[in-house]
View 1 (cartoon, protein in one colour):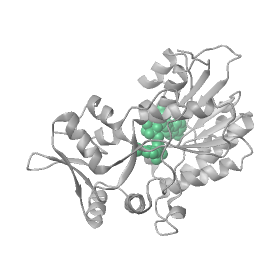
View 2 (tube, helix red, strand yellow; view 1 turned 30 degrees about the vertical axis):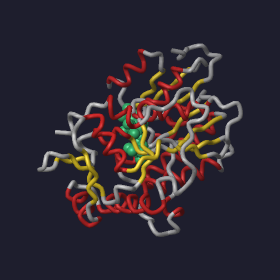
View 3 (cartoon, protein in one colour; view 1 turned 180 degrees about the vertical axis):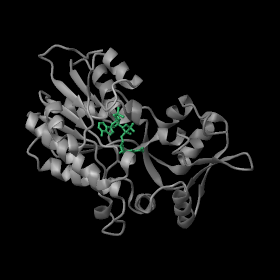
View 4 (cartoon, rainbow, N blue to C red; view 1 turned 60 degrees about the vertical axis):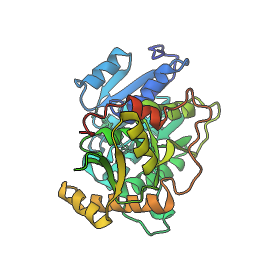
Length: 319
Ligand SMILES: NC(=O)c1ccc[n+]([C@@H]2O[C@H](COP(=O)([O-])OP(=O)(O)OC[C@H]3O[C@@H](n4cnc5c(N)ncnc54)[C@H](OP(=O)(O)O)[C@@H]3O)[C@@H](O)[C@H]2O)c1
C-alpha cells in the first residue's frame, strides 16, 4: 500500500474513483512500489465506496463534475501532477454533455499544470466504419475528446476499455437469458464468431493506466487498448466449463434486438447507438482491426476470461 500523504509524492487526481475504472486505477496505483498521493472525486462522500477510499488514505473531494460547476471543477484539479479522466455516458445518455464535460476536465487539468492526462476513450466508429455506422455516439463522443486532448499541449494518452466481463453478471445489463430447455443463451444480434476484447475492468483496467503513468517517457498521443479477444462462442464455452451449466450463443435478428431494447425503455438514439455498435464490431472489429491489446510491461498479467468465469458469482444470471 503506497498511498501516502507525503507532499513530495506526485498527486494523481482520479475521476470516477468510486466506479469501475477509476476504482481500478486507484487499486493499481496503491499496489505500486512508487508512492502516490491520490485525490478521488465523488458526488456523495457518504457512500461506502468513498468511505473505503478515505480509509485507504485517498483524499476524497465531493463535487459534481458538470459545466454548471466550472469554477469548482478547476479548483478541484489544482495541485494535481497527473490526472485520470472518465465520463459515464450511461448515467444521462447524452453524448454532447459527455464530450463537453470531458473537455472541461481536460481544460481544468491543463490549468492545474499537470504533466500527464490519461483519458478513458473509445474508438470513433463513424470513422472506422467509413461513415457506415454513425450512431455510436458514446464511442464517437469519447474519440472526439481524445482528439481535443491530443491538441491540448499536455502529454495525453487514451486508454481504451474493452468489454467488461462484469457486464455478463449484472442482471440489468447481461445478455444472458434462461431457456426453456434448461440451457442459458447469450442473446446478441451478431454471429457467435464475433470477437470482443473482454476483460475484468474492475480488477485490471488500472494496470494499463498505471503502466502509462509510470512510463519513463509518456507515449504522448498514444492509444492503449485493453482486453483479451474472444469470440462470443468462446466466452459461452468458458462460462459452461466454469459453471457446469450449458451456455450457448443465440443470434437474434437486429430488428428483434432493437424492439427488445426499446421495450426496456431505452430512447431511440440509444437503441441505434447499440445496434450500430454491434454491427460495427461485427464488421470492423471492436478496435477497428487495430493490433491486439498488449499486456507487455504491465505490473502483473491481467486475469484471463476463463479465470474470471471460474471465480465470478453467476448465481444472479444463471438462474
Ligand atoms: N461496460 C463496458 O463494457 C464498457 C466498456 C468500455 C467503456 N465503458 C465506458 O465506461 C464509462 C463508465 O465508467 P465506469 O464503468 O468506471 O463507471 P461506473 O462504475 O458506473 O462509475 C461511474 C463513476 O463516475 C462518477 N461520476 C459520474 N458522474 C459524475 C459527476 N457528474 N461528477 C463526478 N463524478 C461522477 C461516479 O462517482 P459518484 O457516483 O461517486 O459521484 C462513479 O465513480 C462509460 O462512459 C462507458 O461508456 C464501458
